[in-house]
Length: 215
Length: 266
Image 1 (cartoon, rainbow over the protein chains, first blue to last red):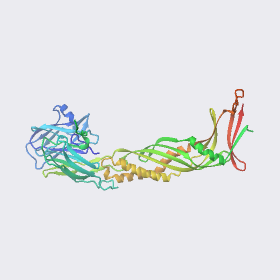
Image 2: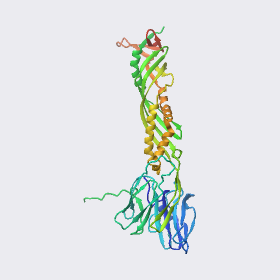
Image 3: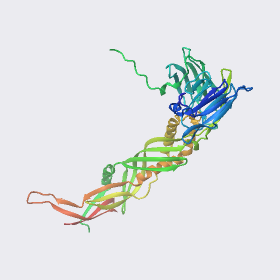
């Protein structure tokens, strides 16, 4: 089973966040429960005053160095409208999350909002029901199938297009999509009801207890 | 001249053979070896049945058409990268709601090391010459048939079957490897091709030949000290004798016979 969740990002997960307002943003990398222990120490994104001609993407590779998760560069200089993409250095990099504060807001890669995108590349076929942990609502239902088998090991059959799954926190029905193994899905928030969507594969959640009946 | 001479013709020896096979019971062995890109942990066990005995002077017993019923289990371990090349994810651009474009960088997927367990059972029929061996294992004299040379085992049909089983097992195991879906067929073909009939035959031979060639069929077992005449009453005790020596030979006096030559001491 593929591990799909925004609480902790692995090698086949990518977190992207756009920065609109000028100012200084600090962020930490680590396991979700470790961010508070960082106590403000972290890494910096400096968003300048003037936007560039085109929004630029700044890539950050998350590495394990000396037993701690660190970005490959401590500071990023961005322009308003630019976005930053975090991704793990290798399959051995521990799963991580990104927590930031600045420009009057606090954010986390765990909770997707209108300024963030979660991308996952599917490696295994199966049916995936992705729920928002806070509300318990099913946000997306994905059917991932194997592509036609090939004996060609050169990768010519790699599906290069991605599926964009719009997360609508207000709609009644979950988004549905069909993908093939090797294809990327980008989860972007279209409409948000609360503070954010924590997207998790339903199978990773503790089994809901049956409601008690009788006396 | 021996004190006691016991004689069995071929018919009698053929009647002893099933008992000897049952007494031998189940033989087994374990080991590990390399097979091309694979590391193989293996175990095998089996038992014998059937066969037709012929006797040849001076001490040869031929068992023809003997059936060895075997069960094998092997665990193939290998780095999948040695079978199929690591794959390259080309990187993509994703347009999100018309207002921004996310670029996923290219990366390489290194295949993991996997383990494929395979179980296989079958039978092989062989013919082999055995020599007669007489040994004293306190407190008994034993006459065994010990294989003379490693018989040629016909393993090609079993090897074909084993290759098929490995292919099926590989398909099941590899299906759980992320991204293998794109290359599953190629990986299974690569694995079975890397082993090949020759490799599977060699592997089966490695597992089964020691079990067959190490077979020792117990034909005769007699305590060295035993009562020749049992006790007939409180004043007529049993008469014991000692078997000082036992020898087994095959002679041909018109028809081949297995002779047990025994010297006794009071």
